[in-house]
Image (cartoon, rainbow, N blue to C red; front, side, top):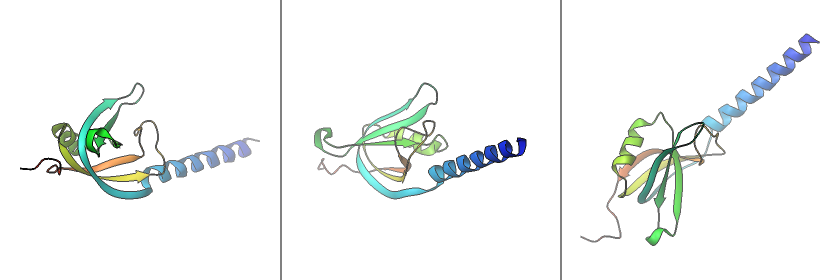
Length: 121
Protein backbone atom coordinates (compact mmCIF):
# COMPACT_ATOMS: atom_id res chain seq x y z
CA UNK A 1 0.00 0.00 0.00
CA UNK A 2 2.83 2.41 0.88
CA UNK A 3 4.50 1.69 -2.45
CA UNK A 4 1.32 2.53 -4.40
CA UNK A 5 0.82 5.81 -2.49
CA UNK A 6 4.49 6.72 -2.99
CA UNK A 7 4.32 6.03 -6.73
CA UNK A 8 1.07 7.96 -7.04
CA UNK A 9 2.55 10.93 -5.16
CA UNK A 10 5.70 10.78 -7.30
CA UNK A 11 3.59 10.70 -10.46
CA UNK A 12 1.59 13.75 -9.35
CA UNK A 13 4.81 15.65 -8.52
CA UNK A 14 6.35 14.81 -11.91
CA UNK A 15 3.21 15.84 -13.81
CA UNK A 16 3.00 19.07 -11.76
CA UNK A 17 6.66 19.83 -12.44
CA UNK A 18 6.25 19.22 -16.17
CA UNK A 19 3.17 21.46 -16.26
CA UNK A 20 5.02 24.28 -14.44
CA UNK A 21 8.04 23.93 -16.76
CA UNK A 22 5.76 24.06 -19.81
CA UNK A 23 3.95 27.21 -18.62
CA UNK A 24 7.17 28.97 -17.54
CA UNK A 25 9.58 28.10 -20.37
CA UNK A 26 7.48 27.45 -23.50
CA UNK A 27 6.36 30.57 -25.34
CA UNK A 28 3.37 30.81 -27.65
CA UNK A 29 4.64 33.86 -29.56
CA UNK A 30 7.16 36.69 -29.49
CA UNK A 31 6.67 40.19 -30.80
CA UNK A 32 6.90 43.94 -30.43
CA UNK A 33 4.32 46.63 -29.82
CA UNK A 34 4.53 50.36 -29.47
CA UNK A 35 2.37 52.99 -27.87
CA UNK A 36 2.13 55.43 -25.01
CA UNK A 37 3.06 53.86 -21.67
CA UNK A 38 0.11 54.80 -19.49
CA UNK A 39 0.62 52.55 -16.48
CA UNK A 40 3.28 50.58 -14.61
CA UNK A 41 2.47 49.36 -11.11
CA UNK A 42 3.58 46.84 -8.50
CA UNK A 43 0.36 45.25 -7.30
CA UNK A 44 -1.06 42.24 -5.54
CA UNK A 45 -2.07 41.00 -2.11
CA UNK A 46 -0.50 37.56 -1.82
CA UNK A 47 2.15 37.93 -4.53
CA UNK A 48 3.23 41.35 -5.83
CA UNK A 49 3.67 41.48 -9.60
CA UNK A 50 4.62 44.23 -12.04
CA UNK A 51 1.76 45.12 -14.38
CA UNK A 52 1.59 47.74 -17.12
CA UNK A 53 -0.50 49.09 -19.97
CA UNK A 54 0.25 50.71 -23.31
CA UNK A 55 -2.27 52.80 -25.22
CA UNK A 56 -2.01 51.87 -28.89
CA UNK A 57 -4.47 54.34 -30.30
CA UNK A 58 -5.65 57.88 -30.02
CA UNK A 59 -7.68 58.46 -26.85
CA UNK A 60 -6.81 55.02 -25.47
CA UNK A 61 -9.02 53.12 -27.90
CA UNK A 62 -6.82 50.02 -27.74
CA UNK A 63 -5.04 49.05 -24.52
CA UNK A 64 -2.32 46.38 -24.38
CA UNK A 65 -1.85 44.95 -20.87
CA UNK A 66 1.37 43.20 -19.92
CA UNK A 67 3.39 41.84 -16.99
CA UNK A 68 7.09 42.04 -16.14
CA UNK A 69 8.95 39.35 -14.21
CA UNK A 70 10.64 40.47 -10.97
CA UNK A 71 14.01 39.27 -12.27
CA UNK A 72 13.93 41.86 -15.10
CA UNK A 73 15.03 44.80 -12.92
CA UNK A 74 16.44 46.83 -15.83
CA UNK A 75 13.15 46.60 -17.75
CA UNK A 76 11.18 47.68 -14.65
CA UNK A 77 13.46 50.69 -14.12
CA UNK A 78 13.17 51.76 -17.76
CA UNK A 79 9.38 51.42 -17.70
CA UNK A 80 9.21 53.62 -14.60
CA UNK A 81 11.47 56.17 -16.29
CA UNK A 82 9.45 56.17 -19.54
CA UNK A 83 6.04 56.53 -17.85
CA UNK A 84 3.83 58.75 -20.04
CA UNK A 85 6.12 58.54 -23.07
CA UNK A 86 5.90 56.67 -26.36
CA UNK A 87 7.74 53.33 -26.10
CA UNK A 88 8.43 50.20 -28.10
CA UNK A 89 8.38 46.93 -26.15
CA UNK A 90 9.44 43.39 -26.97
CA UNK A 91 7.45 40.63 -25.32
CA UNK A 92 6.85 36.90 -25.15
CA UNK A 93 3.38 35.41 -24.91
CA UNK A 94 2.92 32.29 -22.82
CA UNK A 95 0.07 29.80 -23.04
CA UNK A 96 -0.99 30.67 -19.51
CA UNK A 97 0.44 32.10 -16.30
CA UNK A 98 0.49 31.58 -12.55
CA UNK A 99 -0.76 34.23 -10.13
CA UNK A 100 2.75 34.81 -8.73
CA UNK A 101 4.19 35.57 -12.19
CA UNK A 102 1.66 38.15 -13.38
CA UNK A 103 -1.93 38.88 -14.39
CA UNK A 104 -1.25 38.81 -18.12
CA UNK A 105 0.18 36.10 -20.33
CA UNK A 106 2.27 38.78 -22.13
CA UNK A 107 5.68 39.33 -20.49
CA UNK A 108 7.87 42.28 -21.50
CA UNK A 109 11.55 41.48 -22.06
CA UNK A 110 12.83 44.81 -23.49
CA UNK A 111 11.71 48.43 -23.67
CA UNK A 112 12.99 51.40 -25.69
CA UNK A 113 11.85 55.02 -25.87
CA UNK A 114 10.55 55.98 -29.31
CA UNK A 115 9.44 59.16 -31.01
CA UNK A 116 5.66 59.40 -31.13
CA UNK A 117 4.16 59.32 -34.62
CA UNK A 118 1.34 61.58 -33.37
CA UNK A 119 3.62 64.55 -32.61
CA UNK A 120 5.30 66.35 -35.49
CA UNK A 121 8.39 68.43 -34.88
